[in-house]
Each structure stands twice: as structure tokens, then as C-alpha cells.
Image 1 (cartoon, protein in one colour):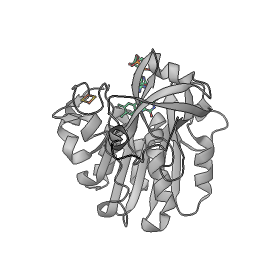
Image 2 (tube, helix red, strand yellow):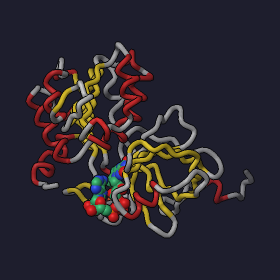
Image 3 (tube, protein in one colour):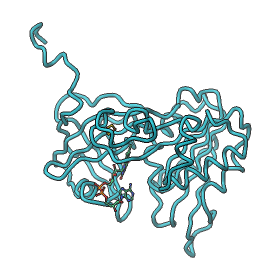
Length: 284
Ligand SMILES: Cc1cc2nc3c(=O)[nH]c(=O)nc-3n(C[C@H](O)[C@H](O)[C@H](O)COP(=O)(O)OP(=O)(O)OC[C@H]3O[C@@H](n4cnc5c(N)ncnc54)[C@H](O)[C@@H]3O)c2cc1C
Ligand code: FES
């Protein structure tokens, strides 16, 4: 780099999407796809589990999508997207080789380092397991640094179970506890039936030494927090990933306002004691 090469020295403008290429796609469920995105040139920026990117489909629009891959091992970004509308649908239809705009990473992260030495309970509902998966990878990679590790996952039914094969692989491990529950069982289902917060009391072993990482629909998170608090987990050791519509993603436009906070920069991962009042007031 020459000494007068100013552009190469400046950080990327957070408003300008960088061009990425879809390297691979994998259909997870009828409406959900995982994409691997590689930068057109250079390396992707580092990210922390829990952070998100803004993905921009040219001519369609931009949405916030959490990282769902392994921060330490994946060369590009991995994102899991459910087709629920115009932009997510356009992302879900991208084929390998397609170009996509990407801004990020943005936002706060799961307290994976702070939880070292403690028990960790990760509670996910539906697509909420996607933003938690990078934290699971990191915790499993440093398994000896943690106490007991439990993953509790609630899915609507066995057919809609995201990352099912991976959950089955993790279940083979003797050093973590995994419990999966479905709202509606089919004839082949032999696991739990019911909502995921109901599993919590069985997995909180030493509440004062527990960190809880929770992601899913807001109503599920509220009930999960209730179960965790009832089991004695301190409010300042419970972390939730919040969702609101995003535009700028850098705390300027106010679209993602949540009380006095902005989800894009004060979140998406937020400590429960800091948002308890506002969470109690909100309706989904
Ligand atoms: C921090 C953050 C992380 C996110 N991570 C992911 C992720 O990893 N994967 C992912 O698929 N999405 C994620 N989202 C949601 C995503 O940003 C979009 O809101 C979603 O994809 C819908 O955008 P759309 O423009 O396609 O649909 P819209 O046109 O906004 O909505 C179409 C319809 O779908 C409904 N809808 C909107 N969002 C959702 C939703 N999340 N679930 C069900 N129905 C919905 C709307 O009410 C509307 O009826 C995240 C959002 C935030 C704020
Ligand atoms: S998206 Fe603009 S302030 Fe958060």
C-alpha cells in the first residue's frame, strides 16, 4: 500500500454495502435456507457470536440477518434466512454465484467470554437457534472452560426442526445436555412435547453460577426469563437477542428504538436487567 493510498487505510463506510458472492446454499426447511457468502475480494471482517449483518438484495431491499456460522472456522459469512417477505424471500431464492450487498458486522454479542467458568444454558425457539449457533460453536470449541452446558430447543413440530442433524450430532456428546421439545408431535416423535420454558427448571443446576442465553419469539423469551428467574438465575446473567425493524444499523435513524436504547447498537443481545421494564410493557 502506498503512503498516499488513503482509501485503502480507511475503514469501510458503514452505509456502503460490500459485494459478496453466494458460495453455497443449503435448504434447511421448506421456507428456510442457509447461505455461505464470500467477499468478492479480500477476507471477511471478524465477528462475535450474536452479531448481525445487513444483507442487501440489489433492487429489492435490505434486512438484518444474524450470523449463524462459526466465527473461528468459516472463511465467509454464514446466514440462515426464513422466507417471510419481500427481502427474505429474495435472499432465499439466490443461487450460488449470485451477488449480494453486505454491511456489517453490527451489534452486541453473546457473553461467551464472560461466561467462562460458569454453567451455560442456551434456550432457543424456532429460528432463534440461528443467532445462538455461533455461541454454541465457540463454547464447544472451548468446552473445558465452562461448567455444565445445556442446550434447550423448542420447535413447532419435528418436520420444522432447524439444524436437526447437528442437534443429533451434539446429542452424541457426553459433555453437554440437549433437550428438544415440539409443540406438536407426529407419530415418530419420541421426545418432549410442550413449550421450551417448561424445560428450564430441570437444567438450572447452580443458579448463581449460571449464564443464560435466550433467543426466539418475544413471547417465548418472556416465559423463558420467568422460568429462569423462578429457578434463581440472577437477572444480570440472562441475555436476550431482541428484534426490531432496522434501517441504518448504526444508531442514527431511530427505526429500531426500544425504550431509550437502539437495538442495532445497544443490542441485539441485551442483558435482561437492563431491559426488564420495557420488555414487560411491550406486546409482540
Ligand atoms: C438483529 C436481527 C437479526 C435477525 N436475524 C435474522 C435471521 O438470522 N434470519 C432471518 O430469517 N431473519 C432475521 N431477522 C429478521 C429480518 O431482519 C427481517 O425482519 C425478516 O427477514 C422479514 O423481512 P422481509 O422484508 O422479508 O419481510 P417484511 O416485508 O418485513 O414482512 C413480511 C411479513 O412477514 C412478517 N415478518 C416479519 N419479520 C418476521 C419474522 N422474523 N418472522 C416471521 N414473520 C415475520 C411481517 O409481519 C409481515 O407480515 C433479524 C432481525 C433483526 C433485527
Ligand atoms: S436501525 Fe437506525 S437506529 Fe437502529
